[in-house]
Length: 487
Picture 1 (cartoon, helix red, strand yellow):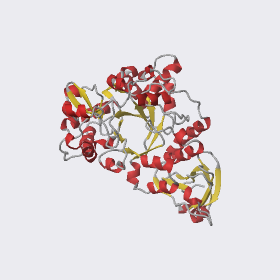
Picture 2 (tube, helix red, strand yellow):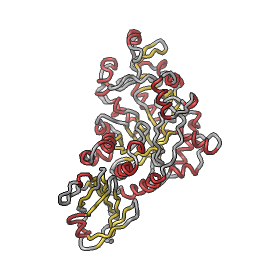
Picture 3 (spheres, rainbow, N blue to C red):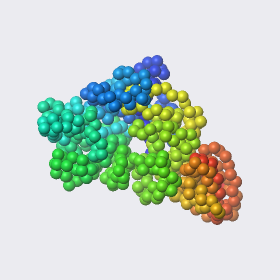
Picture 4 (tube, rainbow, N blue to C red):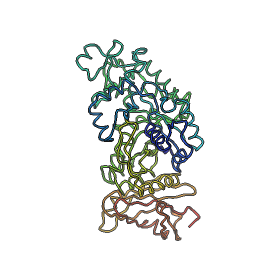
């Protein structure tokens, strides 16, 4: 199963350069650093923000007081030199020369492949930079306006080359000031998107598509109405993805997706879509809500990306501190589907730097958290094999705390595991009847892979009333259960 580590490429290379006392680009990353990234349990690296950033977009950002205030909040000693512009305001899908250019990326990909890791890069389908070549060479690929639109709503339109263009947006928020909206209904835009993604597929093993749901026919029509022209008979992604896969059959497609459109995007060709619902429920709701979400079909769940943070969300150590974060991470890591970790998450970073910045503040390492994450991805890789099955915790007499527990099993021919997490701030107890009848009639030793503690239990108890669990608030077990024919 796919396990992704997201790296803010610009910040990461800057810190490596400072650590080694010389400028380091993608082609010059020391082998020891790649070895550290290729930790057991990680199989894919997402190098976020490698493409050429827009000078015009940077100039807009430097005039935006709201953005500048967010930069100062994250990095109190920020200077103009620390502001590089948005990696999602792309001027050209060519690796930025300051990061090592295409040759540096090719070397990095080779280094990752030698360690068994795939490479994912970004694609921004919904908008382009205000100085993108399309504004002069291919205006029909973009949503255009009129001089009256520009005069009436200068925050929603921008002038370039004597034409008026709509600024990029989604239907629920004001326009983004530094980007121009593409027209998802334009045949030429769709063909150009295929070409762009084929080019990305030449350089990487997968692509993370930013705000992918904005390009769906119904969403785009609702956002842009008559300005976009007639709605095509074929939806955007079913047109694009098969044509890209004709050139790159194994290219991994990952969608940033919201608004409960994950299932629809899976049907339209994406391998995995962000599971924002699970994130929200782990952060803000009870175990019953999480269980309800996990009741969805298994094919759908395998197509989700489970995460506790990414560059758009607050740091997990800030929102889910201490053992609560460890409980949520245990759940995320051991569910079906893809898993997304964020560089700095394992060390307990609490500041989320805006993606415009090339530098972040220094923060102390949370050593207990680093030790926990030193085990978790490796443990999860051992556990997530074979068939996943949810377990229903059963109540003890006069005790309703079983409702606070999340539990499931994994089993294949030679391994079996039980995961149970207390998703609450109170102690919880329950029985977990295990589904493996061959456990009956013998004694069995269960081992918690997170702590190495062992528990000797009677097989008739495990399958009858069930495994007794008693967990402190936000505690959990990942238990290895003897496979058939062992004890």
